[in-house]
Amino acid sequence: MAARIKLPTVDPFLMWLVSCVVAASVLPARGAVLTGFDWAANAAIVLLFFLHGAKLSREAVLAGIGHWRLHLMTLAFTYVLFPVLGLVAQAATGQVIDPTLAMGLLFLALLPSTVQSSIAMTAMAGGNVAAAVCSASLSNLIGVVLTPLLVTVFIHGGGGGAGGGMDGLASAEKIATQLLLPFVVGHLLRPVIGKWVDSHKKLLQPVDRSSVLLVVYSAFSAAVVNGVWQRVGPFDLAVLLAASGAMLAVVIAINGVAARAAGLAREDAIVLLFCGSKKSLVSGVPMAGALFAPAQVGIVILPLMIFHQLQLFVCAWLAGRWRREGEALAAAAAAATLPPQDEAAMLARASEIGLPVPEECRPGVSSNLALLTQHARIALGEGGA
Image (cartoon, rainbow, N blue to C red):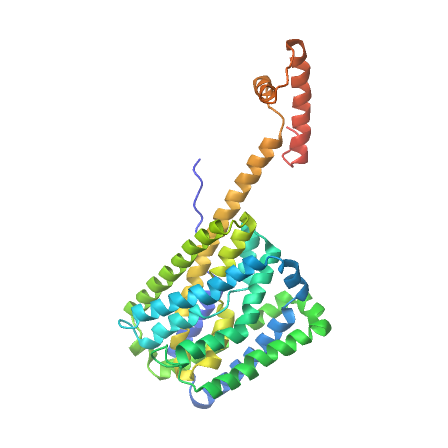
């Protein structure tokens, strides 16, 4: 029977994001209420990056640090190839859609990789989980400093076309106080609070998501007040989806070529694929709040929200494909270790290795092979039949 194609489901978190956008569009916060949401969002961002620092396990990083070539390749995809594609996407779309939306395409290309989903999909596909933890963590650690620097160079410095809307000093101050300082303090306190944080990951996960939802609602409220939906229409959204799909497709294609050219093992090629082709919504939304003027944040993060769901769809499908291929390889390897299944196969194998089997001995050899096959199947977990 033909295998059924299972489509990846929509991330429930995306539905919450869409709900926040709808709520901000119908009932945007204004005045003192918007100020209150901004304060709450800023506090949530500080807590978020504090916990990211506390969750960064030095042991996990050290477990995979030996794969330095793999990590350099992953960083090259994240912070070299993606920015180049972001510049191309911005130049190609900036003439047909709102320049700030085009700038959002460049902004998402400058972000670090995801952590949780990259590791989860690497594990699902049968990749090197320890190396994935190291690559994803290193990408986020470097991104706290490198992403704001790249935004300053390519967007605030004039390469963004629409401009970033904040001066360099204000951006540096927000980055230092909201992102970098809490991250460093959290990591320095890991010896004290690390065990508690590790044992309450499910309890702390809502902090990640609630902080993003707060920023999204606050940002889109400001954007709606400034007429975002008069500037963004179905055509703009279609262009963003096409540009995001093209960027992701190019990265995945080059990823496969690079993995083969470098001679990476299958497990490491999986790490390169999932850690080198993703962009973090959880890090990107708070960073946008620190790097752009409030009236621009809602428009800037719209391409990131589209890319986020697209990468989940595509990478979930790829993870399933890699898993099925791995299971097939394991089954083939297991079958190769089993003794010959019948007398004809036994004689063929004996002939291959130059071992004569007298005719009078063949029934006994066949019986012994059948017994060995039964024990081998039990050892492989296939039952005794």
